[in-house]
Length: 164
Image (tube, rainbow, N blue to C red):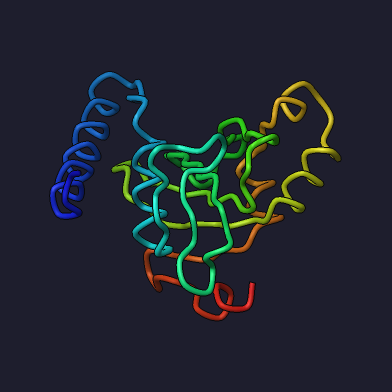
């Protein structure tokens, strides 16, 4: 088992390498999901599931212990642009909530949104097109149906987090 300190160091180096690789090549390394899992667990006080459960990346602690999270991450290079999409959601997984971690160009988190299963499945069922049938959703749609629960500037949004 890797210590939390060692894992933090590995993630920090992964962020640095991923950002440098994107700046150098214009391409993304496929590490966003692992960074997002780490950030959501750290910032929302979640326990990462190991071994992994289908569709579940983490579980809640304390007052949120009954929650099972599917965690998605997305690097946002230009907040003024639209059309960013999140990875495919697993509608058949055993998750109760989805956490969406938005990362900046340096792969650092700046916002985390959360939505519950019912909201996600309702939004997917109301969408048209092939992507929505496969569990794909835009970042803008997720922001509209979800709750902003963490920001880089203020940290955990206590009022939202505790009453959600």
